[in-house]
Image (tube, rainbow over all chains, first blue to last red; front, side, top):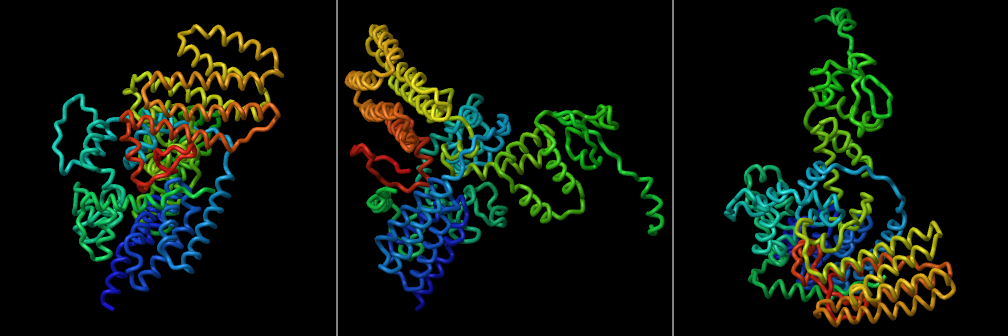
Length: 272
Length: 340
């Protein structure tokens, strides 16, 4: 009985359900659910299974509201995990929800397409808007159009991103001609940031919990005040799952590769 | 102070108004404390003494149209009252920001030209939240922006474009293809038909011909073009012939370049599709569904190509939100792509 409560308690600490209704966190939450199901579903106690099932259903119900390709990919992956791991009845229920969501999505995408004249935003405003974006969104923006691309080249944006991600651990020689985007890119690749950012999770030592980080910081205000400029310790997905399962498998390459392979097997795109 | 005192004082403290003129020529007056909340107006009043009468109305920047002005003044009217709590302001702001993207953009521009920084911050953050997590195509759709970057420019900053001739060739082909697709979409509504299509095909062909044989064949293809324009009925056949022409050109391009241009053979098969679609089009039927899918395939092609040419960083960052997985592309290649 004690062990069961521990699992369920930890799962609730993770606050996956809350993240699902957040536009930005939805894909991360779905991926985490997928990994949790892939790596441990059969071992879970009954009530934890029930929670996970409930959250999968919500994920599918919320999909039409999310309406981005990242959300659709994440939901596709989740349904694959569901199909492999859930018992027959639950699986069917979940898949039905998923299919309904896809239909609703299709209906929504057909509605727009009027040719509207959008006011064009001046460069300095674009730069200001981009200063609020995370790296991945910033790079997406750089691929949108010429004027947006030029705005994303602004050094100040990359400088503050560099500060945010790497200032606490990298000493960089700042000279007058420094290309902050290049500097950021090099450090990003060196520190394997892509992998670390994939989960959307960090560990906050101030509140001693695994949180959905808000631009590398703890979402709780008190923790942000206490931590100052220092970002959270980012976590990999399998580390999150380890926390849930209470296991302590080593965090080396083989684990994440296994994960990738496991997901890869099921990630064959569903044909419409 | 007693209430009767207040009653006497009130008429003396009459509200003063500031006169403002918007770009469309209409003049209105606004309570002073509301208008003065905007630094630009404040500056005009204090430094130049403007706005005190209808004749000396302050003319506002052209980005500030009447509906935007009234929105801005709603905002100012609420916030200029010192008695509001932080929570009240926050709640108001959140509600205030609920509008469609177009209005948000207009509002941002207007607020910026009036130098109303708190509102600019608010709208900018709202716009950033809209942009967050979306793919470039989705962003383009929401903001109605043109797709005017070449594939290589998308992956590296504009100032650092690569000089690799293979990339330039690929880009030009794709740019022409894009133009073609767009023109076909336009033609559906305008019905100018074959003329425009032909020209873009000609461009493509003559470009490829010119590229390979250093202009020797361009005169030949020009003659072909002229014939085509005169004989409408023969177009189908000519297209097929040219598609074979293109096919062989593609092949020779392939062979002369290194293996990384192998992807171009996929381009060829797409072009075959397009050419056969043209034949259908002449019967007055276009299969619209292909275009966006083709576009997507084009994008994916270039992504793969550029990745191999070491521009992979930009795309790898975008994969943060996508799980690492594999898929087989429609042509049956064994090479794995990222999905969606």
